[in-house]
Length: 59
Image (tube, rainbow, N blue to C red; front, side, top):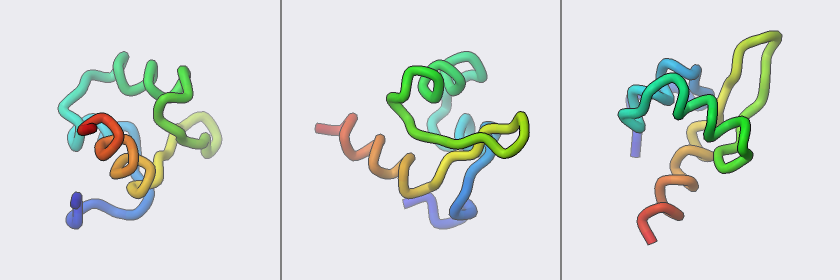
């Protein structure tokens, strides 16, 4: 799943994968629903975390 993407995603890549807007991406991160981390001021999300989130949502 998502093989063409790097192991650590930017917000832009996250939005592209999930077909969501900027506000929704930040809302998922800020609520803790999707776990990520900050590097300086920029958010990063592990690709494995996105895969986990997608699998949980599919149930």
